[in-house]
Image (cartoon, rainbow, N blue to C red; front, top):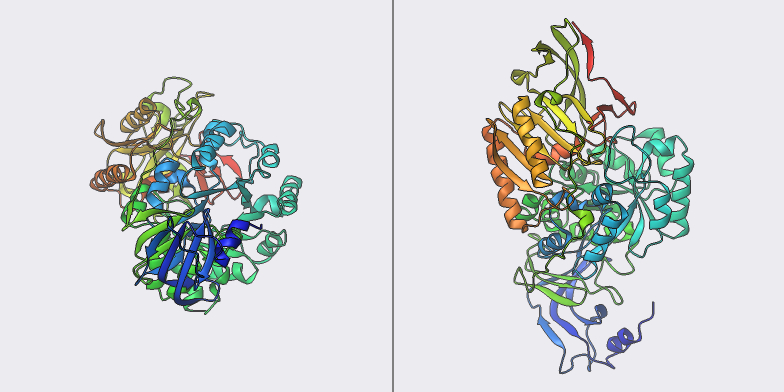
Length: 588
């Protein structure tokens, strides 16, 4: 789009709002690094290279970037910001210091709890912040009420309302099963995205061969579910843009990067994304800057690594007209680095304003007063007893053969396991010695009082319980424990706090993080949430838990679209069969 003011500044006929001088520009189009100046006006880049006379006026802000590198602002093309447990304002405060200037988030978690009204609250909040929020519309707003209870009833018709929004960049998480089933609804929304010239971002875990071919044939643009080098290679060979994930619970980046370092695959259709990262990860490790450092350490060329966090994700989202490179006409999002290899962020210009200086925010953004739709979202249909969290035994049974959810510390995929467990006092007991624990999912919207129950392996607790009101994609209360008494204390504490992460030991709450916004987000700073997370992890480690991110892992045990097993308030879900199954296989 023609901007006459930008043209005038580019030609030196008018002065710029800001100029950055003497920087070493990282050109992600040509993968070169060379000295360059940059002029900026009205939040856009006007000139790059040797600037004409007349660009610097009496009111022009001058930044001397001698000895520093100029990178485009970093982009996370697939992140559920709610997993950070921070408000979007505090999330922005945190990641902008790390050089992130744009993210794509489907805001699905807020929408599940608080509906379109809640979604619009977040979009409104983001409008004035330095980090641009782009909105891929969830593609699976179908009726899954037979499998799970949600706060808001989502429908496929909502997609048609939301896709035309200015903030909407396309479809998010287009699932494989409806495509292979030739779903008319999937065909309809993909066609609408194409008509609007918007993207269709995929969700294709463990999809290969003929199924992958069928899936890609529909025009799906990207996928973020590769967990191995082999999966990433097959997907990029089939024309998908592979978004390599490095989150708090699913850490796939190193293995996927091997297609560059071992197979010499051109990285132009590869990007790095978070999917889900918590506050502790952001505070202690970083955001996109952390992924760039990881890639460089694994042997990726530093400029290529930066390209995978800038131009490549911008093209994947079809926002490269505004983002992704330091080029005339683009939004003035520029990160000043003291080192490319270390991706050491010093200063950040976002939307044409200097917002970070020497690694610190110049002005911290303050969150708004949140509407009632995002508050008081936890209520119970009835009072819960400790025995409600257990599986009642068949009369006369002494033992049960049960399904067990096999949780992974590094992947979102679960295993379908089996175990033999004893019956004690008319209920099926867990077996701590085998690391087979109770798991229950309690409906938290006050609609029906459902409680789904099963068993889980992988958390290694020797005592106590942990519980959370964060659980994709229904966000009921999920609790894992060695005994029903501690489990009940944890569940009830979450209700009292209107959402939380809670750890209980010997009947006492030993750690908690209140999440009073939709039962998902904290009103505290990222640093305070991270400290509380560290405390919870310390307590859980003392209780035997060996997982690096147990709460993040638990929040995905509830997702009915990732195989093999999931838990909802309705019961144990067999994802491959896509049906609720009895957690007990047989009685003895």
